[in-house]
Image (cartoon, rainbow over all chains, first blue to last red; front, top):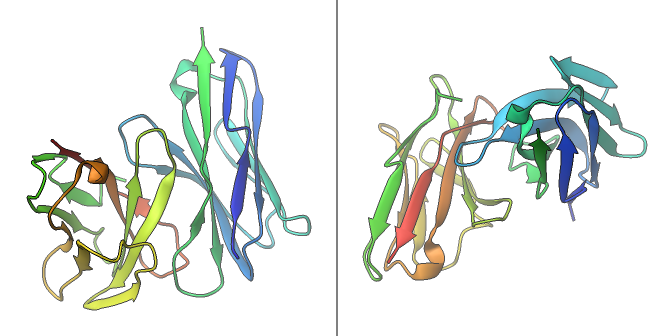
Length: 112
Length: 113
């Protein structure tokens, strides 16, 4: 069964600090992994997308890594800002047309 | 994100009424997905459609819920005889192909009173 598990479930950090969110998956055969940011009351917005051959991808202060061997991904946020407070969702797609598998998300709260 | 248009953004229905949620995908996208998000929970897949076809409806409740994506016009998620437990945010998303990046709309918030 395809599954995506994210940790931690929630995280509170101080403004300016770094943090790392984890995503483990069992989706097979793997096609790509995406990280989304969902602000409260809004739709998710894509941050990064990585295929099998990519180990790391950055988008501003967001850096995603992928280890296809261990089926793990992380999202590192550098120098956090208050606007980073949101839910971060890991989404993994298999190499066939169909629905992607969503993690339940990590809720990040950045405090001043 | 702004390319996927959902309406209404907020909808209030009394128990037993019908709710219709509409979704216009991004230009050039022929794949549409519907997800439900209950308060304090993650996104849950409901249904995946291509033009005029339902590809995967494994996440749809067996009764009262239906979805369509006609040749012309938006995709429609219909909930008949709504109950309080249907209160949730319903997100539509679209992609060019099944494994491409999925772009989300801003959601439709259904409240059943």
